[in-house]
Structures are given as C-alpha cells and as structure tokens.
Amino acid sequence: MTSKFTAEGVLERHLEVLRSNAGLVKPVGGLLIKAGSVDIRAGEILATDSGTNLSFPVKSTQLQATQADAQVSLEVDDAHNFEIGDAVTVDDRTGVYVVTATDRVAVPNVITIATGLTGGTNPSPVDGRVSVIATAQEDAVAVALSAAKDRETPLFANRFGSFEFGDCAIAGAFRQSRIIGLNSDMLTDLGGAVEIADTYIIN
Image (cartoon, rainbow, N blue to C red; front, side):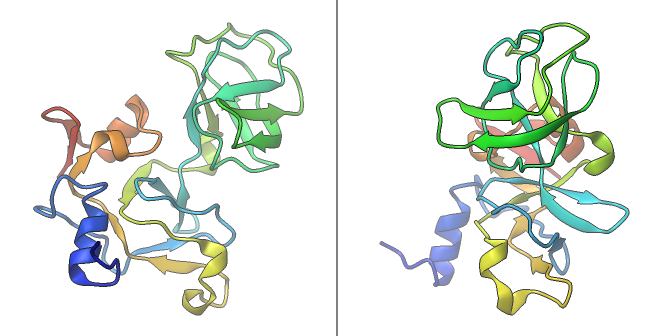
C-alpha cells in the first residue's frame, strides 16, 4: 500500500474525495481554523465567519424522521459537528433550540435539544434539516481533502489556538458521494454544479 507521507500517498488520499487533481485550487495560505473546533474529516464542508475570518466544519444535517411537537430527541444523518451549547434551528419550525447532547454512535445519530419543538409544521425527512443559526456560520467556502484534528496539532497552532489548514480545496472535481453533508444549500453556497454521475464541479 502507498505510504500516506509520499507524494503518491497524498494523491491517493486526495482521490478519495477528488475525481482527479485537474483544476484543483487550494486557498492561498490555507484557512485559519477556529480553536476548539470539532475534528475535520476528509470531505468535510468548511465555512468561514466573515467577522473573525475563522473557519470551521459546517453544522447542518438532514433529519432522519418526521419530528413531532414537543420532541427533544432529533434523529439526524450526522451529528458529528454539533456540540453542547450550539444554538440551532429546525426547518419548518419556529424558534431557536439549544443542543444539550449528541449521540454520534447511534444509528441514526441523535441531537438532543433543551426544549421541545414548537410552532410551524412537522418537517419531513426529505426537506427538514437541523442547522446552527445563520448568524453563527457563514456560507460554505471549501471542501477538506484530508482529516485534521484541531486538538492534536499544537505545533501548528498560533497563540490564539487556531491553526492554518491548507489541505482543502475551493475549486476542483469532487466525488459528490464523499462530500459530507452536501445538500441543496451547500450546493448553492459552494457555487458548483453536478456533472456526470457522482461528480461535483466547483470552478
């Protein structure tokens, strides 16, 4: 097996997310990742807070089941990026809900909120999503090509605890199925288009 530390190993790892290296564009200098962010996974969509210029994994996921009134346990596709204290909205519901717990092992994953759902209608799994409030995260800007663990990279951290993450792309041909949490909003934010089967192009 090719070593991940050789040039061939890097290309091999990238091709898990990319269709090819043709047209690949990385942000100059990388993205400054917010200190204490959850681990970045290969294929993760990254967003940037325009106020601080800090980036972090997008916190938005699809509901897995219709959510009833007063429900506090939300079954979702992927709870990995959500943390206790996050303020979230649920599609077709009114109000803002605070995350009190996440279960990233259960199938499907579960996000627990402090108060039950109220107002609006019961979103269907097809349309409904749980997302951190819009004022707390900006549009998607890049796709991570490899994993990075914030808490395990002290040598690269600056004095504020953030670190530069350069192994991400703002343009290229991606494997759509390997981009985590891709939905219609993310497609629009990234400014790309679906081409042939399982290929997503950002240029």
